[in-house]
Length: 256
Ligand SMILES: O=C(O)[C@H](O)C(=O)CO
Ligand SMILES: [Mg+2]
Image 1 (cartoon, rainbow, N blue to C red):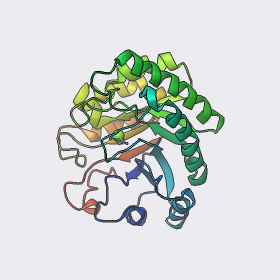
Image 2: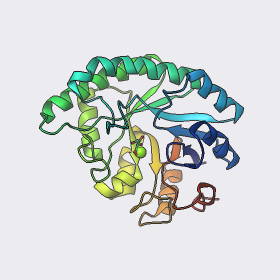
Image 3: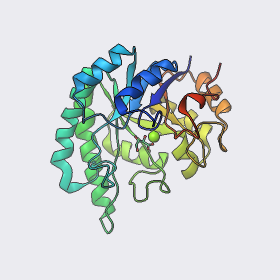
């Protein structure tokens, strides 16, 4: 049985963030996810989840200054201490909201930076975080992201995820497989899903081009949902897209 989670950073843009939970529940979602809710007390998020009968499926480690263009700090050597204290902050939010998995955004490579140094920093930070999250019973995820939407982002392919994961050497580092990003970067979506499925803890969906709802572009989501069912995928499927119109009218892709 496939389970869908509403990505509240993208769906229901007409509502204030805290009102998006009720909108998702009214549309039948049982789970929600978002980039992060660190501007709100964790207890407030827990309350709104409870009031709406929702499970917290996923959120990200603190991503740095999003408005200034940061997309994670895990690869930035001078932010090592900040990253490590952000792990404790994320664990606190995960405990309070009952969330069992947290995604790490690697960050944008500063122009001219030494990529080896960035990767070494990322590996060391992920080793630290994977161990802390394991002690807390929470999975740590790493997501490759396409270079067109996010130029300079450090991890862009599943091969790169695998290379980093091999260096991290922890059973508690999983892949967040976003079909939209991987369609842009490498295609071969279902074969890669089949190969990496044991390490995939969360998937996300959007169509390409446009990053709108499934059915608006070139990705065959009917086949992808069949593959996920066939493989016995038991995680959440995050609806992480910008609706082409009204969010509540965008769910024609949900399988019967
Ligand atoms: O953009 C994405 O695909 C990520 O999942 C995210 O959380 C924010 O960039
Ligand atoms: Mg994603």
